[in-house]
Image 1 (cartoon, helix red, strand yellow):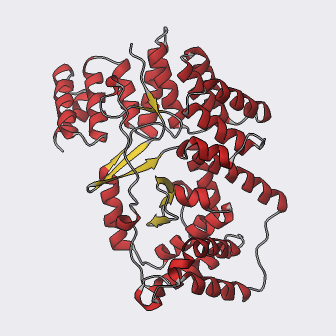
Image 2 (cartoon, rainbow, N blue to C red):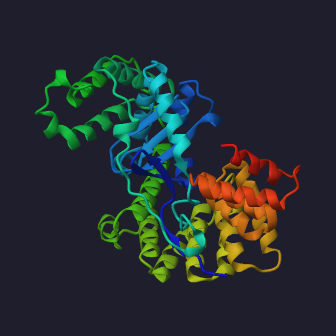
Length: 431
């Protein structure tokens, strides 16, 4: 069985003639969810309906669709100073939702994004080649700055209202509203020189200096400010540094990673970023050493075991990779990307009972968070109509309608008319 080439990154979205990358990673998504949960609750959004999308784009940006779908740019995550500032950004976007500024247009934008979404992989750390997996050819899509196409233009008054609502939501969530000022100050540092040449009456957003003054004035009128315990703040900030380190480790050039996290830096975040960068660069031994250091420090962190599983897989040490992924799953809940990673390794190792376990994992993932890779692995470890149906679903999620219909027809030829494979293939053929 051919060794599958692995590349780093994860999900693709096709938008018109351009492509934008979405990153699909359990650790990052869960942490962002925890960060913004207080303001989401304050905005009366049920926790289980909150969905995080991570856009691989260096823009300092984020937006919310309908209060439930939160799109956060990697540029924002890598640059934003604190998790509380990130929370304030989302509070601002929720302010637009509550104010009804984006209902009709954002629904159209979201529907188009969902319709064209092509989920290609299982996480930041591990991805099988796109297109034809057996060829082992990596297909990468460049980030395209979809903000210009997906973000809506709001009037200056609507932006001021959303800023005010952000302060109110932060207070209602018992979070420090000064996080909004931290964000605006960063925006000023990034764009201040340009803004000084702009006519404030010819732009849709208030100038950043005005937004800072408005936020400070509104906050100054509060009788008391919410306070968070020092220990909780320190813990949350440390966790956020891990999130940023992971993104930088995977997305930045190796030299930049070492510049930001030199070997003299022995923090967890620095070791994590360097281990990931070393794995990307092919220095698996150093990557493994760093990961084992993190595991010794934090033996109950599932994501360090996940990284170890990725590294062992690239070493070709399937037994050790399976062991690491199993440990990761034992420590985590609802981790379909890690389950898919384990299924992939089991399909490669192919020991007795490996196929049965891989099938079980893939079917569980398909029920909870369907991905093309899960369908592709399922096609690999099954046969007959079930295998062809899984390939049809794989191509369907990749927006390859021709091959999707081709395999759906093959699946129907090999399946009974009342079988799930036949019925589901029929759904594909009718699209």
